[in-house]
Image (tube, rainbow, N blue to C red; front, side, top):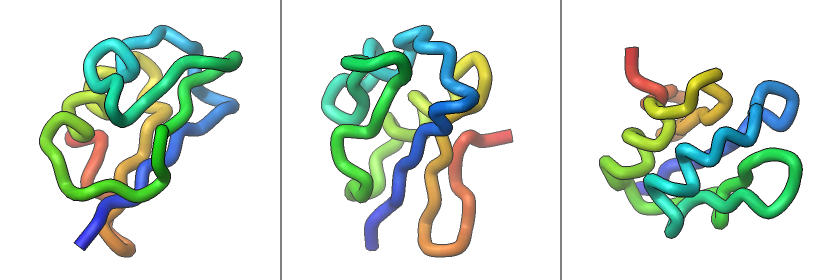
Length: 71
């Protein structure tokens, strides 16, 4: 089982919250954050990063099910 991480470049405001919280999963090298790898093993830290995004630009999916950001 793995999760797919994506960051909406159109929504991301490059706050850097995700990269600061989870540098092993996100980087801020361009005008918006990007996942280091598109698929990762499930990790609560990925969900914490998605939850911390001020514009909810991070989407975490487990197959067809959206698991992050959490409501």
